[in-house]
Length: 108
Image (tube, rainbow, N blue to C red; front, side, top):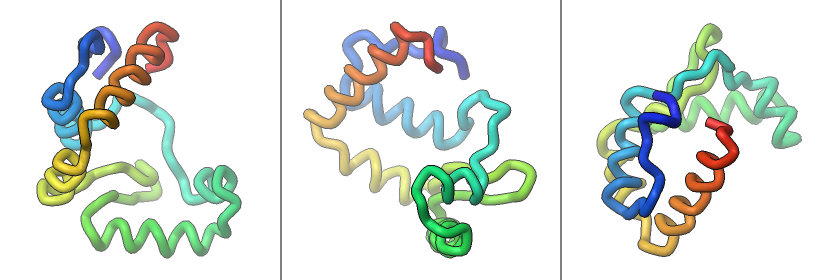
């Protein structure tokens, strides 16, 4: 999915939820891989700690991991519903504002 396929103007809760569900199922177009080493470097945690935490997330159906594809967000339907139902209006408005900024900078 590229940025031209997403309408950020006036984003509201339902639109944010739909985007979240779509990204959760289809993912983002990228050739970059999120590795244990990268997470370790970014967080300052040991690689073993990162591996244990990713394993927990994988066992709880939040992420998938493979050496080829790295760590990928892949929440199951129940987890997706939990996340989307947990958003409140202020968070979604702020997220929409962030997406507006990203779209103007052409980061995605």
